[in-house]
Amino acid sequence: MNYSSLNITIDNQIGIIQISRPEKRNAMDPASWAELDQAVKELNLDDNVRVIIITGREKTFVAGADIKWIHDRKPLDIYGLAVQDVLLNVYRSGKPVIAAVNGYALGGGCELALACDIRIGCESAKFGQPEINLGILPAGGGTQQLAKTVGLAKAKELIFTGDIISAEEAQRLGLLNHVVPDNSLMDKVMEIAEKIARKPPVAIKMVKIAVNESPTVDLSAGLALEKALQAVLFSTGDKKEGTAAFLEKRKAAFKGE
Image (cartoon, rainbow, N blue to C red; front, side, top):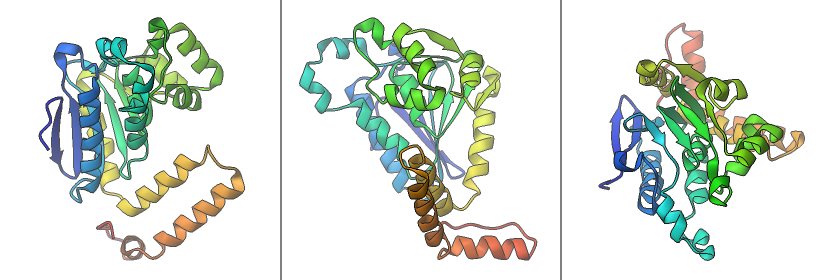
């Protein structure tokens, strides 16, 4: 597919989605959200990709949604193209998704980062859910994912006030895994992505399923799911390769089988 709002590159089993709407500070409209949804789906189907990175162009990750689009939306439009649905697909991606937050991540941009598995930001990155200032709420999963990430009280404060926080504060709250100098962001992101890409892909997928479900089920159900996923992994070629490599004192070559 040809994309007008995204740049897609694949290198060394890593797919990079760069959001490219610099004239709008990478603010997203219906077409760009639909493109992001399609790009994540396509990379999930590509056997040459084991890890997905999402980043932005020109010192902005995503500065939220296009305000003109929000201004013109009618109540039932939320049941057409919903940002929530796109970001749920990012969250459920069978392949790990890393957010490389290279600047402002506001509104839908903050929610996009929250939908990713790992978040790495540069020192100049900023985060916030300022939707309250427009008379609306964060409906891309922000009321749910932010609370699970930073805690209920802090999520309420950030959403009630619309305050924008620094990368340092975001890391302290658990919103960022790492903060690095601006010129080192992609080096750090690629270091982690390449490390994950060398791991067994089926096991990574099963781990993600188990961990994503952990907040939604009680301990007994979570342990039952964990056991079932482990049974699946016991049947894989990668399990045989990983254990054989360990016993033979060599590096494993995982094929995703």
